Length: 160
Image (cartoon, one colour):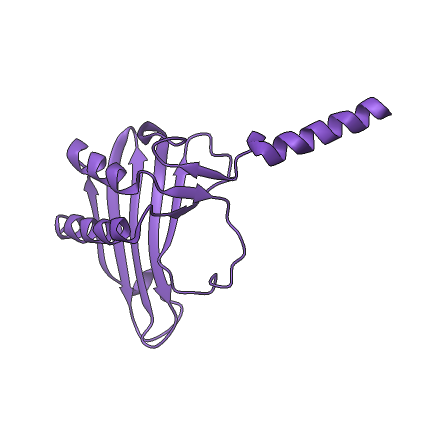
């Protein structure tokens, strides 16, 4: 009985001392070759409703960029309201630039938040062996987030 209690206490202590991480750092804990998807979504139901998504993903070993904008006067803005869409296979330089912009960002488990009903932007990162524990992404700095937005706008222009 005492051995069982000691074992449980040791497990709790290891958990609290970092035996199980609560955050992951892109570039340290998550490598470029392990990334499978990254979402940047902005969506609001206010008048006029808005929806914009930038999506980076790997398919058959090749990196891609997809964007979609939806516009209309009703909510929700379903796929039929898409006014802009485009897909582009990324060059190695573009994929490296993407990774550089998200490097040192933090990925943590999804949590309930007072801003969960907010319009975003919302960032989610998925990678091999994630097991659904960590996806909510935040940039290292606000400046990097703004650079990322500009990068997406430039890629979007290349899909036309």
